Every structure is written in C-alpha cells, then in structure tokens.
Length: 387
Image (cartoon, rainbow, N blue to C red; front, side, top):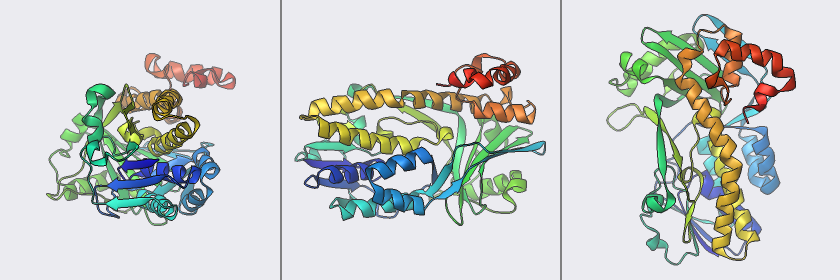
C-alpha cells in the first residue's frame, strides 16, 4: 500500500511506524510543512498505562520514550496563601518534552524506511493522487479536513477561559496546581516536569480576570513579568518562558473542542487532533493520538478492502474515546466554574478537583457532593458516576 501522511506530529509518525512494523513493504511518506526541528510546545504528560501499551506494539520507541521521560507520582495544590495540600494520587505519571518525543518517532520511522519530507505543505489531496491512502494528521486546523468539512460534519466548541502554554526552569517534582486570587478574580496554573532542566506551566483564567489584569493588552515580556510576580511564591524565583509571535504578542488562546461526525472520505482519513480534540486539563491528547494510530493500523490489516477498514476504524475508535471526551468536557467545565468551588475548605476543594470529571458534580451543591462522596466512597458510587 502506498500511504501519504500529511502532518509530522505524533499521530502520523506513530502510524507510519506501526504500519511498517506490520508490513515493511508499505510505501509511506510523511509530509510536514514546517522545517525539521521547528516544533513548538514544552512537555506532554502521560500515565503508565500508555507506556505499557507502547511497549506492547513497538518496544524500541517505547524504551526511548521511557529513558527520556521524568516521573511524578503525587499531586500538590497551592491555594494562594491559604493552604498547600499534598497527596499521593496513586497514578504514576510521566512527562517528556514534545521536541524529544517527535525526535524519537522521527528516528524510529526513518529506521524502518519511512520517508519524511519537511517544508512540504499539502493543500489538497489531489497532490497525492497516486496514494492508496491519505492520512490527515495535520492537527485541529487540518487543511484537508476543511476542504470537506460538510462531509465530515466538523463542529468546534470554543471554551470560555483563556490559557497560555509556557515553560519554566522550576522543576515540579509532583503534578502541581496553584490558584492565586487577584482583585480581578482567580488565576491558576498546572505544572509538571518533562526534563532535567524544565517544566511545563499552563496558565488559565476567566476572561474577566485576563482583561482586568491587562494581560489582553500586554506584550509577552510584560505579561510574563506579571505572571512571575503573581506566582512568585511557587516559582521560587524561576522565570516563565514563552513563545512570542514575531510582533511580541503573547500566545493566549481559548481551547477549541473539535468533533467530526465522519472520520473518512474516500481514501482520506482523519487522525489525532484533525479528528478530535480533548481539553488539556485531562492530559490525554498525545495518548489519544497514538491510540488512533494503533486502531487505524489494526483495522487496515484485518480488513481486506480500504472502505470497510476505514469504517471499522471510525466505528471502533469513536466508541473507545467517547468516555474520555465526556471527561474532558466536564473537566473544562469545572475550571470554568471555579468560583463555585474555590472557597471550600482546602481538602474539600482538592477532593472535588480530583473528581472534576464527574457527571454528577455540576448538578449537586459542592459541599453536599463532598459529604455524599465521603459516605459512598467505600462503595465507589460517586466515583463510578464519572464513567
């Protein structure tokens, strides 16, 4: 089979690796519009279950990922100067630099015979007319998907809060939350390590707070200086590191949750963020992209024809990720409703932060939910409702 993968992110690269492992005769080319090594972003996080799955399908890349990752196994929550709560969350988590992850997948794909062409933008699938299969792994702004948006049934829901993806030289040994109150409302971050020298730090706040603090007008340098001052106690004097536009603007965003009614059109199939996105607060984006790749490869090699294979991939994969998509929606809603929870006693706040994916929590007064959870916890009743 001749395969063209558009987009050089984790989804396309891992798909090409798994396809070559199943059948080395596949002719696969990955097209990436940006220069080699120009990827942006700091670290991505994942849990042990993903690493275990990766070992099962491609041990070589899994070992490289494991060796390049840092581990965390607890949560820490700071609430202004009110309290610090630390708990062993039970789930072993890992962080790895996005640049390093792409390097691992690129080197592995090339070693298996995959061609990777950088600075090659594909605007329409007609440019790849000789390909048996075209994989659109070109992200939420997929050009190939947008050409057929009516067929795919593409929908985008824009989140209310604004966020900023940053790095820092502060090393977080646990997954860390910090909530700081200002005269314009609360602002907070999630932080986790991804290397020996850096951590990821995602800043989020309501739009009223963002505007009230002047972050909507500040250039990146001034904005980072303000954020460093707000979070000085937790950052211990370490700087925040951004990624400015050429004109110095900060890269504040509203998260876009993308869904598609259909995932394939003819021989064109969607993968990763081109097919679906999930709110960053559950840290599942990379895991879902790699899972998409594995499901698509499995379908292609268990079906004898392309159309049944793509239909099977769409049907089976959509069913598997449905619970994660729902969890991401409720997690985003929890942060958008932070004033509802922030004045709870610290341990109650922390407990409900851990249950932010619950379908019941938005409909029950938080203090009552906490008490019910304490009563029902041994039976797992409220936790079961998350699923």
